[in-house]
Picture 1: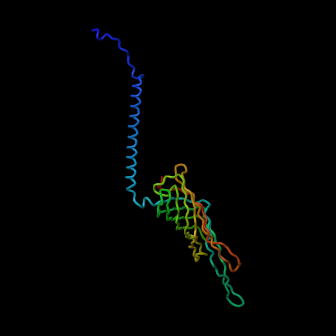
Picture 2: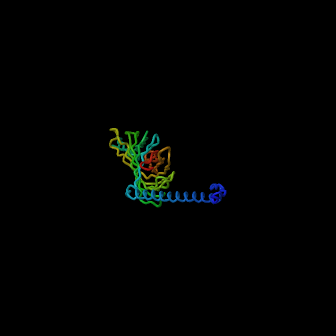
Picture 3: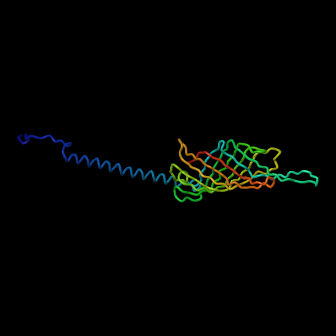
Length: 254
């Protein structure tokens, strides 16, 4: 029995150096396991995203659109119309040429901008073909109301909304093309014979970015005015002018 009577010292595993090293190694092992699991999870999520995007068609990756409008920021001057005033003189019937200078102002307008990316240089740069169709509610003097604009533009896009995979917060776009307009859309009887379908070269520049919970845009559009010469008044004047500021929202793009 004396074999079991020697004194036994209490062992404290938490205070010994070996126990501390063992605990640290266990923590390191747990951290390593969590790191490996996170890598696997990230790879799995990435594979799922790539698999989802692999089913997106070419058109879905390259088609973008937005909707916007103007309030008291859409002004245009159609081309001058030649009018011959026929009158009788002592020498017989004579005619005098006049230029009917008309102008238009939309109180408000609605724009739908359809865009197709023609080429993506990278995830943040592209070149696109745009058709920002607009319907304006206003007046054309003399003789009508409302207008329809149908521009054809080639745009350069950078940053936000430039490509399908872009995630930048701010984006820029600039372009040029040809603006076609029908003004006025509704004519009075007096000027019903006047053809008001006209066009002019134009350019635009804009910025895109987040605002509250939406992706928004501000777009400045302006045509290149053309000079005319009035034979009767012997002076130059500018026509075919279109200026507007569009504020809108990007559709289908988070």
